[in-house]
Image (tube, rainbow over all chains, first blue to last red; front, side, top):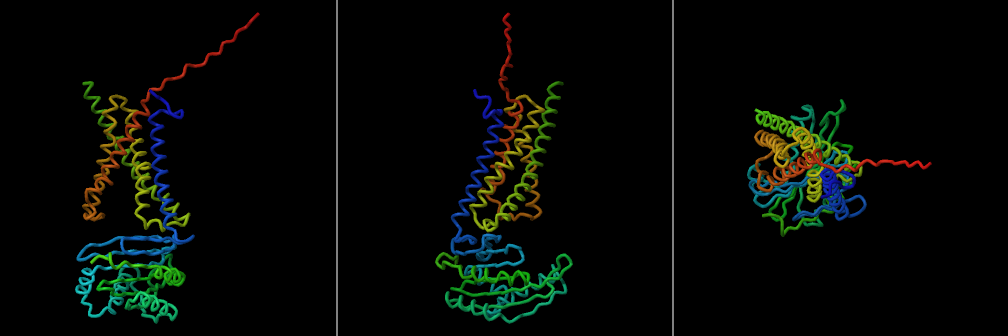
Length: 225
Length: 164
């Protein structure tokens, strides 16, 4: 019987070899995932059952779904500095109906207001009670981009841009936040797009947001009903 | 009288071995999480967090570096202290350590830190059964490493012949 392997006691050698094989397998899978999903040097492509989206590879991503009174699929993309977020929520037909019913929404254009109010209330209760909300006019180039995007896909959209003054305090410095809230109903299914974050980071990441939005592809045929 | 002392020694060392395993799992888990995040951030590939394949890869690495290593450390201690009936006794540190980990999971569920909806058969296999088996394997490897009988090479003898 072999009592030593590579000059080590056999169980110790098996232990080291097992760790190495697990680590190498895991690292190889990570490497292959990276290679297979890169669209260019700095962007990755994420394909799920019904959407396809590109995003910077330095951004952190969280995705998941809630299945309560209809299915809601969500993706949140956090910028490199974690100060800006692009959030997508795709509602199934049933979830859309429940959302509209439970919030007494009479028109789709009211949905962005509802999201804004929710974020503002959260900011005041959790971050800074003295935060002030301003509804601001959307910049022409951004408006033009969103309108072109919606026109290309045939979506009727409603959007709102806000600015929250003194939204949060970090290292004794007060920061403002900015947000763009878009909602649309496609085939009786609600899509919410929120681009929100600290003012400087928000401005800096506008081009990324445009590129992300442009890359979004939805397969209506497999979108849950 | 002697057997009672043996059982007490076995129970005590299994408990200590299990505690070592439990502590090592928590420690190595934190280390692995921090190191992975650091690698992702410094390489600028945080976006990989989006893919299910990456989560599977992380799980495979975790099985080897966290559960197997922790089991090995627990087994190393227990094997060094017990030294008898290894086939049976090396299972105890893994059982004790896994029970402690299970207790933490139960507390997390009961306090609402984890949603009960994620609790299903696949979850049990991934988070309880496979980690336990890895710890068990590690524990045996640790115990047998200490008690492995190695054939020592006979010392070389130098013979000097002096011819006159």
